[in-house]
Image (cartoon, rainbow, N blue to C red; front, side, top):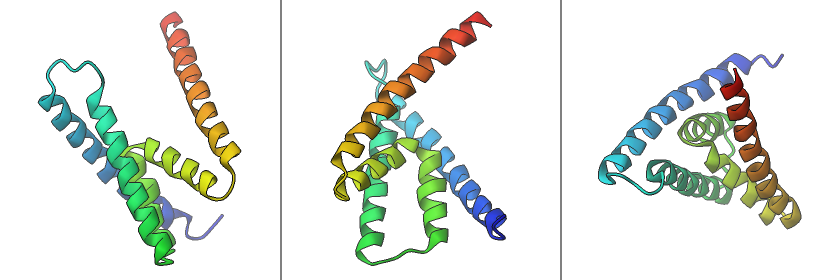
Length: 130
């Protein structure tokens, strides 16, 4: 086992704690601004904000060759992962597209949607039968 595993796990956990609280706060704020929303605008706002932030951080760190693993663990996996995993999906898909793998980027989008929605349906169906 990696001797830094515990330290890395704590960084991710601390970031996730902060990100989850931010998700709760932002989502609630948006829902208070949109009484009887036609769509889940709180979730939409969190996903879009998370994608913007991970794009900004990714571009900033890549352009300056900043590769501190602790920063990436805390911010990218922890904080933004707790805030929204959709930002990770967006960033990973962009990375595939940027590295001349557009077919894999499209496959990632399709698989995430089809398998994710399929898993929600399967879980819901199984849960109702329990």
